[in-house]
Image 1 (cartoon, rainbow, N blue to C red):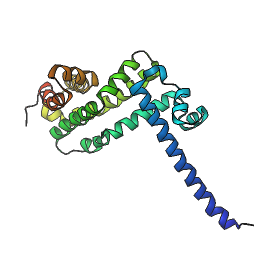
Image 2 (cartoon, helix red, strand yellow; image 1 turned 180 degrees about the vertical axis):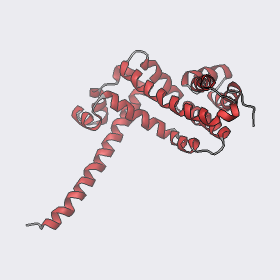
Image 3 (tube, one colour; image 1 turned 30 degrees about the vertical axis):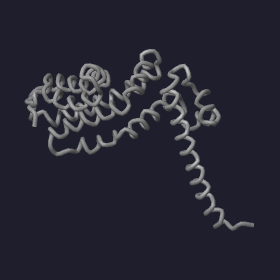
Image 4 (cartoon, rainbow, N blue to C red; image 1 turned 180 degrees about the horizontal axis):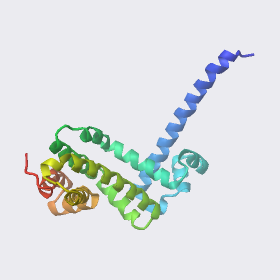
Length: 212
């Protein structure tokens, strides 16, 4: 018979193996979800189709994510990380308010550039699918919170002395860093890369900053 000590060593090892397998399965499901969004859209985006594409059962997907909304949140997190959205942590701790503002614009414009076609599809689906709409709105609320912090830090430069002026600048920053605005700017300027270069200066002008 195995000793109690050997059992205690085996259980953590087995748990680690299960967690590793779970991570691999989750990654496979998220990869399948992204492929379906890129190719098939909302008609093919279901628990059943994802299970088939990822070669797992629907119950496995339910165990990993719980709901379709939670799966979308995880997928959007993965898309954001793949596009470098984690750079926002550094931006939000910048000492210079102007650098924070420019960094905020560049992180989002880089994200829009890298995922422009996919995000077009996601925003289109969000207009007709409540769960997609909810997930997109949650992202917009996060951006609103980050924009609020940026404006509070830049208040002394923009001379936004009262709450009304700050609220107007927050609204402007949220609008100018939205995917909808970036996509329209890319169309009018001829390319997403051109829009990426223009956006920081457009934001500085809108918030009454002069170029550095």
